[in-house]
Image (tube, rainbow, N blue to C red; front, side):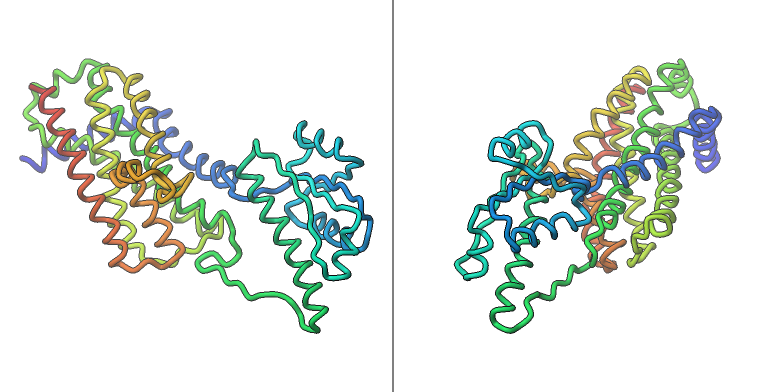
Length: 368
């Protein structure tokens, strides 16, 4: 009888979600759109930049540096500037994100080995982009300096650099595994947060109270469909990320899916708390949105958790996406061994137990 009742409530919840054509489209299409849009829009690269050049030198070495800046694939245009006032206006009006200034003795200082300096002004209003552009300029200047020093010593300058796990520093390799964790969280919370609120709004919650279903059966029945939907969405992502975006999948899918189940259970517990506290589906949607923003910010997707204040790192460790994001990136890029996957999975088990228990207690109090 328990098996039959559970089956009935699970089928009922699945039909409640899938019988509406708009709901079916909402469950599949938005996550796919988010995967493609965020994958290409949330780039960590800075491209198509405009760099101003104020060249009082006009010598061979200033021309060499400017030519290399112009030849960079990240630079769209080099803007010649006539004076320091032009330089100031170009930065003030956001015509350029950076401006390089060569004094009149730049090439002579390079030729005589006295050490030449390139003046650089960056638009601090775009601090992250300015820091990345600064890295571009410093790398180009360093390459020119190494060649000059190498030619004097009679040797070739250069260095051997290897980037583990992402040899070409392709931002998609970093972004796409992280997006799996974030989009799975959004889609799962959206599905489960409407569950109890929908019963309240449609007036069917009282029917659940007088039904022969036990409280734990109702909870399980309402939690299983969102987990299944999350598994379906993530499976689509696991197929698309390597085939469409070219991100390698080097780890074990078995350990990945074991961690994924507990991740979805933790999210389902949070969504059930939101749904139980909400009287209408609109309130549930707003509550889901309220929870999604801190879940994303604290996950380490936008900025590393290690960069956060100590007290906020403690809060981040209670955040399910923080752990699964590490697992997703590790399984895709590092071939993360099962022991390390487990080390990041057991916190998800604890979080899932805590959120589901809290949801069950709150739901029981509402039922009674």
